[in-house]
Image (cartoon, rainbow over all chains, first blue to last red; front, side, top):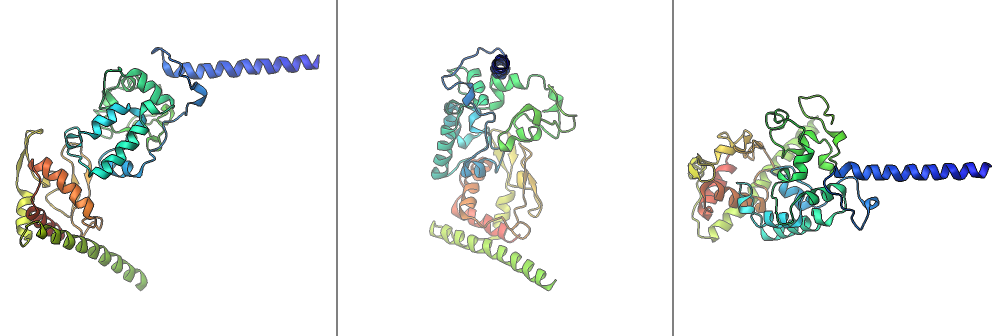
Length: 192
Length: 132
């Protein structure tokens, strides 16, 4: 009898674990057409992770927040890095050596190369034929920020633009964009 | 206490020496590219010279982002990003890295003037900045 009870509990806890894992998986996709990848969800990192390339960090954050490579597909980074003389209206030219080092880092850490859930979702949201240049214009980004009114961002002098990740995502520089770490300056803690 | 003063003095003077050595090396390089003598007053005139920035549709000069007072921080006219003072006397991080100097000359001459600066112009501007 005792043994039966033991097996029963084991089975129950097994079922619970499985169903919770499934929940965790479905929470993210939000009905945008789930596509189970061959690696499976157990191998996905929770965060996009910090920038690991010194040249990228130094050069790009001299002017703006250094965006995680995993937020755009490889083709986007290639296009951005090939047009540094007109970088969103600015001249951001680099010498060839530095440009190649950074391009290589961005390509090998792009959304189509990383198994984390942000990159996956981002990639799924972008048309195969599109080459987005701004993370903030991808469907995934817009979907994730759809409930945030303009007065909290563009109309908020402490934020100014959706491109200032770190203004609200306190862990952005460590590669953490979890919604629990979000505080919009001038507004009380953001809750979804 | 004296020790701290001495250390501070040493740090300040070594910073000034660092930029001086780099600037002198740059000026030497510009001379080999055909430039003559350099003049801080000419550099200042270049710093203030206005040019049409086509993408913005506005007249701009170096001070548009760097501020007219080189000992004060500037503000990027489009992004609003703070730009630390250019004067080596108040900002020891300035003019002490030849690669960085050339990188920003390339970017900012093209953006502000719509062309690269000549060796003469770069030398005059560096001489002007170093004097501040």
